[in-house]
Length: 240
Ligand SMILES: C[S@@+](CC[C@H](N)C(=O)[O-])C[C@H]1O[C@@H](n2cnc3c(N)ncnc32)[C@H](O)[C@@H]1O
Image 1 (cartoon, rainbow, N blue to C red):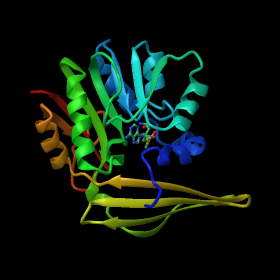
Image 2 (cartoon, rainbow, N blue to C red):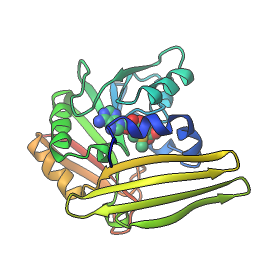
Image 3 (cartoon, rainbow, N blue to C red):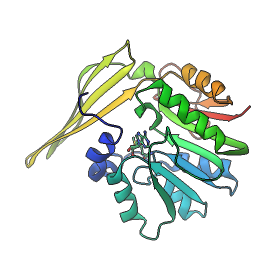
Image 4 (cartoon, helix red, strand yellow):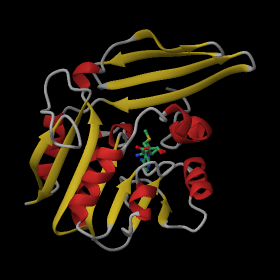
């Protein structure tokens, strides 16, 4: 997409992000990360508005979050005026943070790196910032259920219609979509670009970064196996 930069998704969606995700309760994610951290420091890649990071910080963990979008970080700051979450503005493929973490985690953010070289650089940086015995935990979409193109109706209500127009380039594994929100007072266009990366590709990149797969599930509670039609995979990696 022309003029689409790493920060575009967040800059365009920040004021609607929490409202659009209000039906997706991240309780299982929060509990899983808290359980893995065992009181240690945690780092979120693509912290966004702090949907997951802020409850972790309120539970007493030392939480750092990196995000490339100033608008997303501004929303986080509105919700967290005391700065419980240490918010760092930057690109997680460069990982501009100090220190080591018991858990590094990402929820629906790593596919936003459109270049596989950036994805690998990100994992190498994560490995450098993991404590011995630390864990990288990621939730990313299952490409098998995501590759469609065309136009879908995401939501209809009395005052609103939410459409998703998408296209997929299988050569570059690039998925591009416009979330179009139509209301009486106007139209919003929220673009997103993803590189649909398979779990096997993540495993290979993780190996190159010095990490190996420990577990893979279809949910954070680790009760659902990851299967062909799982919406996402939740993968846990540990240092080799
Ligand atoms: C779908 S949102 C997920 C936010 C949060 N993890 C959650 O679950 O609510 C993806 C986030 O990743 C951020 N992001 C995308 N690419 C990034 C990059 N290269 N470096 C840092 N943040 C990035 C976006 O700005 C956005 O806030």
